[in-house]
Length: 295
Image 1 (cartoon, one colour):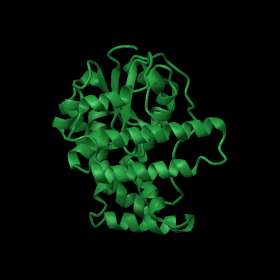
Image 2 (cartoon, helix red, strand yellow; image 1 turned 120 degrees about the horizontal axis):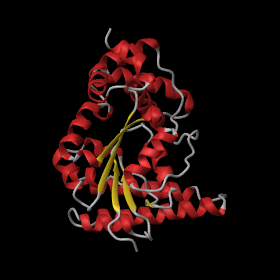
Image 3 (tube, helix red, strand yellow; image 1 turned 90 degrees about the vertical axis):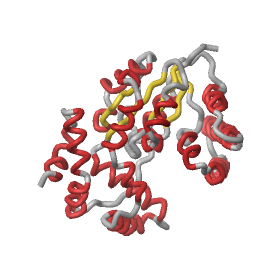
């Protein structure tokens, strides 16, 4: 077995291509990822919500089991692997207190010669500086990836995802999305607001990490040869072809009105300003919403 693998965390942002990144890295011969994408180990430890999260994992196991029938042998093997990895994750959460050695054991289980292990959990982008700094010291070589998506587009994608979960049938998604958006104007839906805060996430990451440990990418540039090259170089793995035109976990349809877009631009103006001032050269897709945010 290879020794001292690089430990990779992808800490967000939500609805910014992290599922696509998981699929790419999960298929890379130099990377070992478990069948569960989002482990939520450290945010669950922070909230002391192990029992609730175990219940969520059990629901996911039931979903995997229900999908076994009628699948190809390859797909059945994949689902069965996800079930096994989910039960192992329950075992991890059932331990008394935080056990980072057991967590690293979970990540390493089944690894052969792969030089990278990892955990892709966007919720980690909300963690404190102190927690992120501790995570950065869990391995000899630790790397963090954070992906930014145009703030308005990310916001609406997040709303569509939640609307889809709360709707009964696709016909109700638009109404539910509009309802969630209206609630945000009343400072409801704290989770959506928190995950829209690029300024807060990047400030914490920059305070917790050495610059060499952090790679910041734009979602709008993620599906390109140059971005894949940067990711592979950052992780120290060979360059590999990726399915650049294949989206993962696309949310349900719902249309953002012009008035909603203008309102969201105003809400998110500080995020555009911060990212533009700090990183500069934001993608073309950000430009129109940035202009609207300054009106």
